[in-house]
Image (cartoon, rainbow, N blue to C red):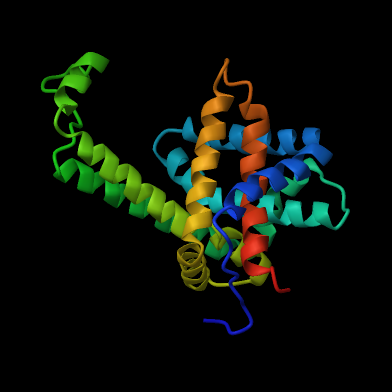
Length: 238
């Protein structure tokens, strides 16, 4: 690993502070961050509507957009303007490793899904008709642990690479190098990461009531918080 990189070991409570500090950045430029988040979601969902290849491309590009969010947050802290075109800054900074990260994450998620199917998770109804909700709930009885296992594995994988996009974009790291540093940082700060994840889940749930209007604020805060956490863990002594 690069000896010039340092990982701070933070108190668990700092994980919640990442979200409050992200809100502080959001509050200074709310319309800009709402526009950026809406642009990201519009592009992502637009790609998902494309048959066959759209979902693959959307997954490949997620680390690129989160690299853009990190660069934008850094620029905001330096007093620079935020523009809609900044959503594509990640495409100009070490693009190939970011896309490779998206590809690897997609393959890992497919592997987790395949494992769940092998363990007996119901995937399709017999015959030509799809499951109804009630039929699927009945088929799932006694196999809920498979869903829980798949969810925990997915959370662990996402958590392990949480800091990888800003590391790739801001330190010009290779994908493998960034993933190693990100996983190490997450293990060193597992308490902060757990509280951050729980707090993020709680505010997402609260944002859904009523009519999911709170997502207008929560989605930008989530995007900004990835940079806030990276900065505290990797630049605390800088």
